[in-house]
Amino acid sequence: MNKFEIEGRLVVKYDTQKKTETFSTREFVIETLETYPQFIKFQMTQDKCILLDDYAENSMIKVNFDIRGREWQGKYLTNLNAWRLEKVGSNAAPTAEAMPVDEAFGGNFPSLEDEPQNGGDDLPF
Image (tube, helix red, strand yellow):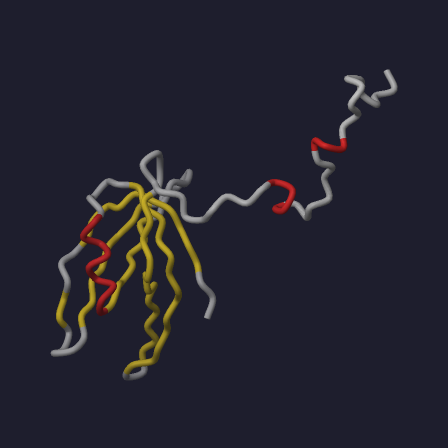
């Protein structure tokens, strides 16, 4: 299953709904930051429902989600199933450890130790 992510402003978060004795869902809506903003509704299930508690409406978030689809009584339903939320902006914690530039781009760059020691450079002009 493909995994997707999108950033936007948290517009509204709904209360957790207990669908059955053992199954719960929670929905929320984000507004994308595009020329023509889109309002996109996501759903969280089970233990993921509490992840939304840490975010206030109007805060910027990144949503990691997958797309779920099913047939029910001759109708086809599609769901955007959110499974991770992250803060976006100046207060956001880094999501991955920074990789050195030479490793990130294939390691084909000369190191500073390879520079001429005579204080000059090898430029032809």
